[in-house]
Amino acid sequence: MKLFKSKYCLLLLLLQIFVLSSYGITAKFSYIQISKCSPTIVTFTNNSTRGSGITYTWNFGLGAIVTTTDYTVKEQVYTKAGKYRVSLQVTGGTETDTTSTIITISTGPAANFNADPLYGCSPLIVKFSSKSTTGDSDIALTSWDFRNGDNAVGTSVQYTYTSPGIYDVILKVTDKNGCSCIFEDDKLITVAEKPK
Image 1 (spheres, rainbow, N blue to C red):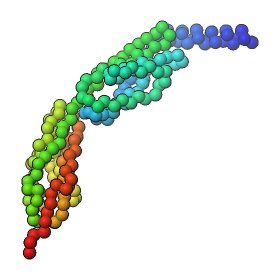
Image 2 (cartoon, helix red, strand yellow; image 1 turned 90 degrees about the horizontal axis):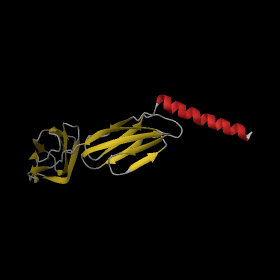
Image 3 (cartoon, one colour; image 1 turned 180 degrees about the vertical axis):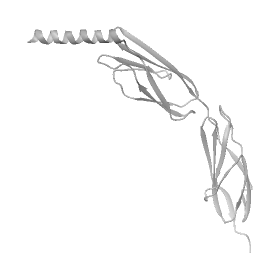
Image 4 (cartoon, one colour; image 1 turned 45 degrees about the horizontal axis):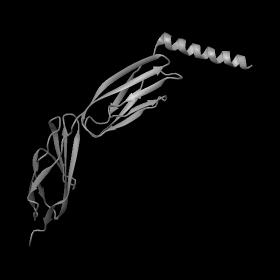
């Protein structure tokens, strides 16, 4: 009985080696970036050869190398802009295959603005000017949210406050890469009642 098991295991091992030798090991993966700009999460899907005894060695370009036998999806957080070479090496027995690609993480825009005046009686006309800076791509859209249901688009806009109150203002800039930055200034505008 023991001899039969040994022969059976040996047969499986020889069969596995034969299959890997006949068809070879193929390293292949795909990835999805949540955003083109930092910080972003990149999800990697292993599309390589599967099988018992096969190991997968990942290098995500961040300094750490991960070797595993599982086939699960991997996620990495890239906090800085730059070009990262990601590689996957697949090993099965004496067979090895490696594939790699370059992932580009861009620098997004930085939103900022000024407003004038910041205080006055209603109706109060305030001019808002974007002072946002670009990253690796030009700014394509500048949008304003006056936190009272009204919105505007443009690098420089004028808005009239007709009701007394204290108002927040949100500026959102989006570049041609599709990367966005939001800047909110709390309690920026104070509108007082007009004296009777």
